[in-house]
Length: 345
Image (cartoon, rainbow, N blue to C red; front, side, top):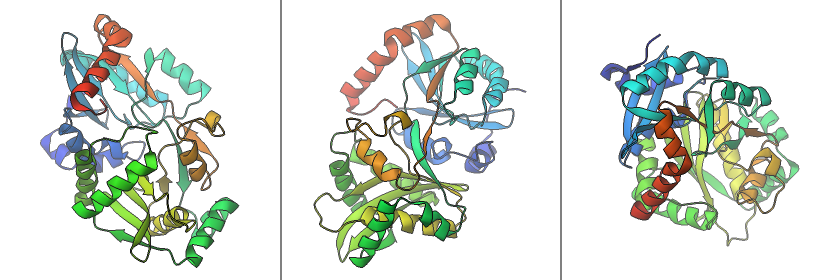
């Protein structure tokens, strides 16, 4: 078992290899995501170890060396999988002047997983992507899926239908990106950081052009009430971005839009629909949590919140990592935000 850089042929077919990983692929491990981050001051690296394909983002940190981050990866399904690849990956990182690797596998946050990660001498670190979410199993018949929704969601869907709300897939054009971005800013309303419009336009259109992303709008006449940006990889889809109007009397447009999304995704054999992002399960009833409103909407489609372990660091060079952990990462993120007015990760 040897870690190596992917060949050009493997890179050309990267998403197919990602889908073949034990986790079935993740949109944050795709070639599209790598190309987007390469325009955001990251270097994209493609690594293969024990038939696990790993997209890694690299930044050079003065004095310390190279920092590697594998968003929502590696694509494993157990800590045992991780245990097998860590020794070779650590050696490979040392050869490439790396002092630490930030892992972000979608492993469930269980007592046994947490203990095993500590045994692997991984250091818990600050999350970069959403560590909590709501996932809807859409492999079932549509009637069964709808029956699993809360009574409130079903009532909202009926209300939207009675108000003649319609849904449609629309092109991810510059015009539609502008509409989406402005409504998304209003929806988020300061509860989390909104990147520059150029980042989102590139993100949305890159996925659209490769067939890995789509826009869905809910409307009454010409009035747009709700919007979703949905990513697709393998048998999985994710509601990566969403927005809805706050000043319209019609109820239920967002709920109807999710039903329409599920109905469409089933036609292309998607099995799992990730509503992407929620408060931790322990905080779902905390009205002071910044994602409380988002969470209460999403648990209407599945009351079970999925809690992942979040981010862990593999320490490659202890002395350099000690500086990074104590103040280097925090300082780097702060400086990056001052210089670029954007998130580091």
